[in-house]
Image (cartoon, rainbow, N blue to C red; front, side, top):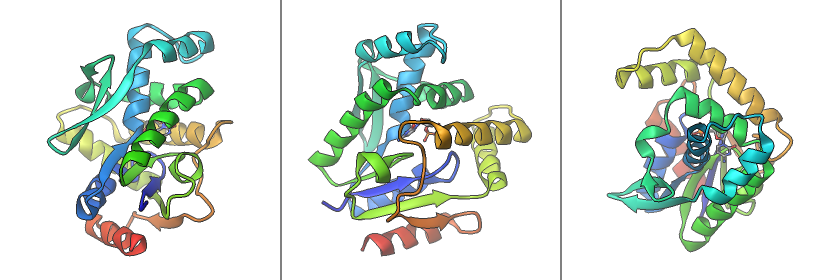
Length: 217
Ligand code: DC
């Protein structure tokens, strides 16, 4: 199978790039962060704190996360409800980062991701795709950009949606989230040994897409 694994820190442009690469290759795009976000939304709704390990683990049995595709778009459902429009807030971002350190949460979502990649060719993005989820993927990319560029991209994205936000706060949040994602005990974000390192700070979307298409062959 020609699966493409894209890992990297928050705001590196993974989902924008992965979506275009998937379209060009005729593959399915799988956004694994959305699954961790849907799980985090469930916990927020249940009033569970990021420190309550027992409650987080029992939530894994109660939150049914699944993925379907509508009009070429990935729809994440939480117990049957389409939650796509509810999982992009800073609150959910931070909760997803905090609860994804849990082994049971990861086990559940990794199994779902591996099942999807077995059924069809995918472009999958996340933090542990090249290292844990699809270690045999023939094409692995580690996509990053400077802290300032990543914060500015997130700021522009939120501003365009009409969300009022502060660039410095966003930068602080991103750095904190990266630090947690890179230093957790289970499946931390790191570059797989056989992943190609791509810094998108000074590249256009097209340039990054073309590089990945070239690498994937
Ligand atoms: O890619 P994202 O920003 O939507 O991901 C949200 C959080 O989910 C991220 O901070 C860490 C976690 N995550 C993970 O641990 N493993 C993945 N494969 C994808 C996301």
